[in-house]
Image (cartoon, rainbow, N blue to C red; front, side, top):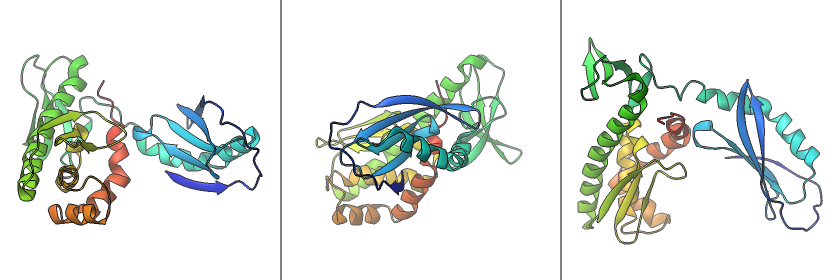
Length: 254
């Protein structure tokens, strides 16, 4: 989220209008843009949604349309530069690249209709070997990543919970976009399986973060102190997710 310019216009007090959706063309790419008024907003705030698949603009209630248009025009270059990070990221195909635990793997179809998906090293190069029909490539890779994510997160979360003397009641994997994980009061943990594409210390941080909520159901100083005790690289991992996390959402496994 990028904070931008404040409006000097004295706004009339009225109810916010319903969100409107437009389509912006950015470097030849059509991107949905949702514009939402907020009575408490004092500035325009532009957000790129996870994966770069959509944009959201929050504006003060009653702001004239011409100011919204001028704002978007002024920041078109910024948007073009930011959205360029997502170019080609969603393509999964033979010969392409995919990260597994922070390591780039070349995707190689085996040509066989049956067989497992596995990560191997061939001639010093990390390779993700995928069997099955070409149209099933994305689904088979997603299934493989889910399996690997479960192996990592169950092991790490269990170790952190044992360290705290806490109990995990269940562990669920989802493809969430608004958050990387969650913890319920009954000890049920949920994670985004896409995290397995991140470096190991980031995966460990996510497991530690949610387990820490078993003891501190908040994000106060004591919670972050506990996080850093469980995962000493908490700060580095948070920084990595802030810079790179949205790229993991850009990959289309559908």
